[in-house]
Length: 292
Ligand SMILES: [Zn+2]
Image (tube, rainbow, N blue to C red; front, side, top):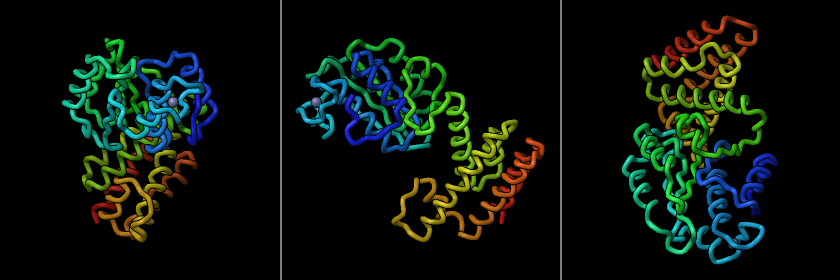
């Protein structure tokens, strides 16, 4: 497989190359990890690889490759949710995909349905998608992309072949742990923005009894807060939507205060403090920060 300008780690390149080159790429692929941009680029590249008839696939030069890249291939449908925003992909959108999937392709042997930031599918949308993943028409292919495997129900995961983009893919267990920390950090971050103490309490619950994830999540939170603070002073700097929202809700002083709470807790976690007490302290101390 030709990855063009995209640089990925050896492991995923090897796995995808072997599937693409042997023509055995699964009818439903899930890409996780990496950045939103990487996920999108790889999704398009895979779609090109499925349709391109030159070697190595995709050649990126033929009409088919160009059409896919330009977004005007009639047999490719792309929908995209918003990262981390539940239900940003409507159930009707998935129902529409289900109907389209049974129509014959126009010029390619398949239709490819690409669902980017698929974490935007709520429970109902995931159920609707599951139905078609379970009994897909032979002419339909699916490429899903999302931050983490944890964004999906097990029933969906069992129907797709997943590839992790993340550089530090390492072991599957390590990857899962990391994804859990990132998800928890994002949940806590959103809860803080809502200034709702109940939501903060619910969001920190995921970190109980798991000190490693606890620390990783807090480190990630500190980083997100730092990005918000940078954005506050330079609106040209890149930041996720939630980081920008965070910057509009809290002052620089408040952000520093929250970061200090997190840093102290990480230090205490290193000193072997009681795990569950750490989560309780995190909840109480962050709640105090937003109450002021
Ligand atoms: Zn080509």
